[in-house]
Image (cartoon, rainbow, N blue to C red; front, side):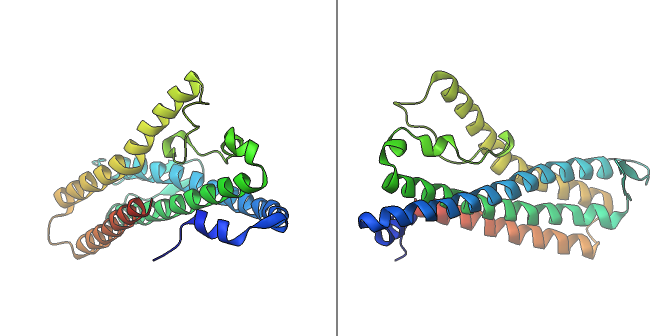
Length: 217
């Protein structure tokens, strides 16, 4: 049976010496937390950009190129067929980073509870958490007895974004993407079926991982 983040921290940092060590380790955890947040922010935005590019390519009647800034994307069949699989891989990475982000958040809060209990009691550890885009709103909320009405409102909006963008929207996109590709290129295209199988396997892995994470909380 594995140990939770809180259990590992409580077993590792004890006594007066543990408080001093906790402060140093909390700095390392926060630095890693920021790095993960930056990667997650970049990848989540890129996923939406790639989704938009796919829609532009897949529903164009002519095989014209698309230019974004200084980048030109050829509207070739192979590009359209591979893009949904690429997006599924990036989605898997975002889900993986989200798990890591949550672990680091739990670790940081547990460390602050040890070395600065008053700050933890007032949720000041959450006040300095690394920012994520609204489209990928994950993490803890401020305690009900502390949160202000405006914070509660924006937290509810962020939760809706998280459910929609993180879970519903990507899977809906993949479904309609392959429906469109099968319409466009037919059932005989081997590359299309390879892309579909890869995407399906990744989606299954994502669902299993999310369910396992939910069972561990």
